Amino acid sequence: MTLLVLSVVVAITVGSYVFYFVMFAYAPAHLAPAGAWMPSGPEWGWIVLSTLSAVVLAVFAAAKLSRRILAPLTSVAGSLRRVSNGDLSARATSDDRSLGEASLLVEDFNVMAERLDRMAQEQVFWNAAIAHELRTPVTILRGRIQGLAEGVFEPSEKLFRNLLVQVENLGRLIEDLRVVGLADSGHLTLQVERCDLAAGIRDVLALTEPDLRAKGLAPELRLQEGAVECDPARMRQALLALLENARCHAAPGSLEIALAWGGGECRLSVTDSGPGIDPAFASKLFDAFQRGDAARLQGGSGSGLGLAVVRAIALAHGGEARCYPVGGGTCFALAWPDRG
Image 1 (cartoon, rainbow, N blue to C red):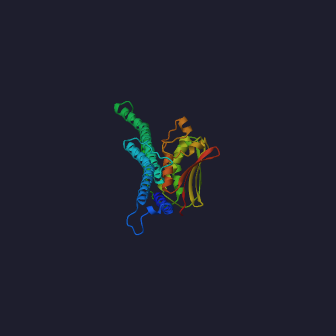
Image 2 (cartoon, one colour; image 1 turned 90 degrees about the vertical axis):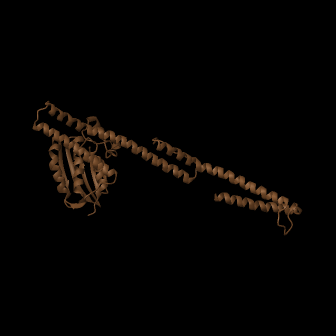
Image 3 (cartoon, one colour; image 1 turned 135 degrees about the vertical axis):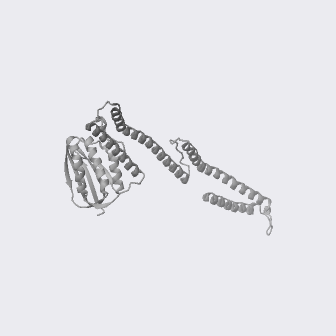
């Protein structure tokens, strides 16, 4: 708009100089006499012509400018109506002639629409995945309890222990869902304190070692002694998830459990001896309900939430979860800042 105004002013000023130069040179008698209040006929003609030219130029520029402004705004408005009607695939468009602000508006709207679309797809996926994971323990419990009620099964300690295992699995799944949900909403709270995490790791291993050895895994501890700052309960939960992941998917062999710190970072890791993970899939393993290829082929028994819980706890501590190959196996690590 500033350029348009300057162009009109310059055109009228230069045109006026040219007009009066020509009139003084070739027809001075047609100019208004000195001291006259009203312009002469030719001067009136020049005033009308210059005004009409300025108006035509302004209308032309305004039409071009309005199209550059209104086209992307109209596209955004139409896409908003489609989104409000449930069509989350709607996207606004702009061309190279659109103004910078209008183009930014279109880009921001498209980013918002893409996030909404992704959230809707993730919600559908989560609902289906949660229903699938809950269905198995609930179905087993219902079948066993119905069998007991109808006299199909004889009450026994073994049967009750199996039912208790299913209840524990169901409770663990619900807790994992709760942790991941709290982390995604930014409400996962921690009780951070200076603690002897190595002692907590030994306690966790004492509980899980029989199941690990039953799967052919031989745990090896490499723990740096001393106090670290963390939420010990959440760290034990993360370690349980890492050990359960190894129990379900790792090949028989050594299983190294390590705790170390240095360089401003604490690190808790579990390293197996195989079978390894495709590097292309490693970055997705910490997403909820993701399983590696080997787990899918072998019908892995994990819920697909354990590593998501590890990442949630790592992020809550201001750190990150990592996965990388080590020899023929894989190292799953939880790292967080050392504030000691």
